[in-house]
Every structure is written in structure tokens, then in C-alpha cells.
Image 1 (cartoon, rainbow, N blue to C red):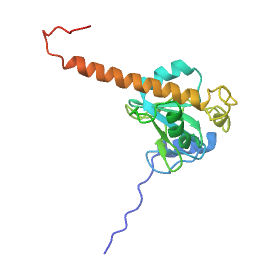
Image 2: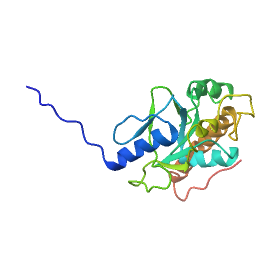
Image 3: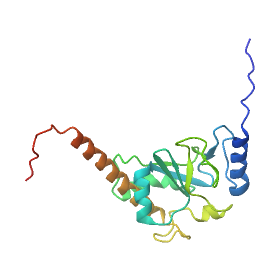
Image 4: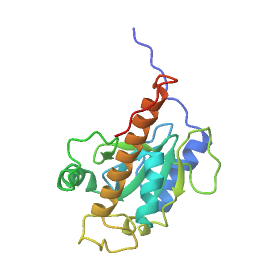
Length: 194
């Protein structure tokens, strides 16, 4: 005979966080603990190493909302953009290169960053680097695949953002490989340069 187990009770922090996203931004959550934001409805996400993300942000300037979780950065982009990223990477001649850059769209989710002004619950928890604005304003600030150079807001178009992110992901990967190579060089062995 199967035993029915009641669902886990959510914490006040969980309920408060989920309500903030619903009330302030109109964003859907999974309703689970930890709170997760559903992608593909109001926004999609470009996810990349935080080091590459910081460098990319320095290149493109203003973007839409940006979150950091541990060593990963999440750049929010217009809903539907995740479907465009593979084609953009091919068009920008980054196709087939392992960049550690992914797009999360319809059917996906990300851990919900702690609402702005509230402390993170644990080290490495998702937090806003650039929080979203009030309801509906957040979506207008998301990079989209509009006319190149004009996404209709202050954010760069999706092409510029993806190109900067891919470039910086590649640079981080090359730096990691170079550091790994130097760490494994025999000591006392001079390097030959031509």
C-alpha cells in the first residue's frame, strides 16, 4: 500500500520571492523551492562563464537584466531569441566552436535571483547584477533580433550581444588552455621561440 506524502511546505522567503516576481514583473515561476523563473514566456537567457560575461558587458555597455549565479552569468534577452542563437553563431562564424555559451528558451528555467535589495540565502545563490525594471519595462530593455543596431530600447541588438559573448567565451577558453599548458611545462626547460 502506497503512503501519501504531503508536498513540502514552502518557506516564507520562497513565497515572498515568487510573489515578488509575479506581482512586480508579471513573470511566471515554477512554484517549487528554490524558485525558478520560466524562460520562453517573457524572456530567454544567454548563459556563459561569469568572466566572459563581465568582459562582454564591458564591450556592449548597456543590456537588459543580468544575473550571476556562482561562476555563471545569465543575460536576459527577448523571448524567442534562444531559437535564433545557433543560426547567429553560424552566421557570425562561431558555429562548431565549443564556446561554453548556451541559450535557454521555451520550456526551460533558471534559478530566480534574490529580489533586489534582499540578501542572498547562500554563497553562489543567483543574484541580480543588473536587476529588471518595473513590470513590462523589463521586456522593453531586452536585446532582440530587431534591425541591427536598433533593438528599440537602450539595449544592444541580439547580434552584437551574441558576437561579444562568443568572442569573450572564446578568449576565456583560450586563456584557460594557455594557463593549463604553462602549468604543465617542465621546469628548467627553456621555451623555444622562432
